[in-house]
Length: 117
Image (cartoon, rainbow, N blue to C red; front, side, top):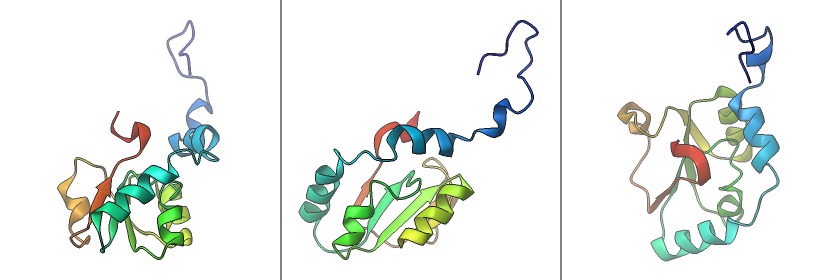
């Protein structure tokens, strides 16, 4: 959003969360799914960690294969959607060590797309 001439952000401009922007931009994207599946297979048995899991878009094919998936995301709306999909989602960011306290050792950890910007 542009701050405009006054330098102030217009009322309501902040009501669209990053979660909503992501959902609109990446929501239907599946081109990366084979990559995450191949990496998980190569990593062997064990759970998978999706850092910046969002609503679980990138992890859904792993869930479909019976993998246990843990996720970290700062947005509560994304975590709710991820949990509904079957991901053990916890609050946090990639650079916050507290986010990893409840997550067991995983066979694979990945971070899809623009999570680390």
